[in-house]
Image (cartoon, rainbow, N blue to C red; front, side, top):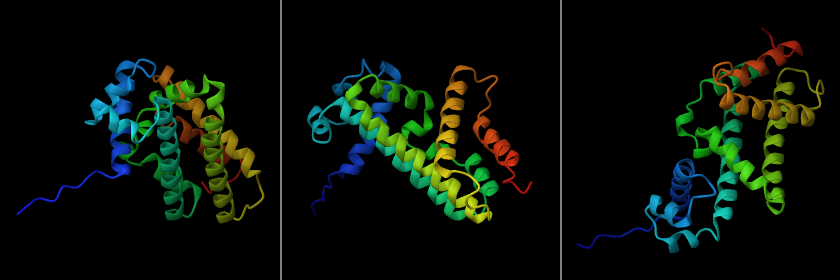
Length: 203
């Protein structure tokens, strides 16, 4: 009886390339990582890499896009399950981060890839699209939680989203530089403090 051989789907191949690229980037640096090394780490040929991506830059943009899409989906799923901001923040605090994509698990690599893309002016519009998507996510969360608390219109959701996102990125950088004075939950603690200072928390 012959065995049926199944070829991996494009999504499966991309996921393996993302994981392999993250490993190679962390070991060799983004600039020094070769397409051959990434393909080999994923268990693919060089041709298999080029069947999915035209270049290393295109792979990096795809990894950033995948990270943003997964973050949006994960946060919206949590928001749908929790009726108020306190419960939502607690769910974020206790979320299993080991199941996240490579950039979600490695803030340092995430930062390095953003800077790598930002160094080339022609790549910045792609990066700006991801930034705007993240801002919109936070703005939607702010707007939704305000409605649920009966405080609709109390804040400018878009501006608050930009402030919150800048706060998150800032604490992520501080955590990388000085983890001793920047606990892992610094961002969520700051959000809780802001929430209380604006009278949006029942506690």
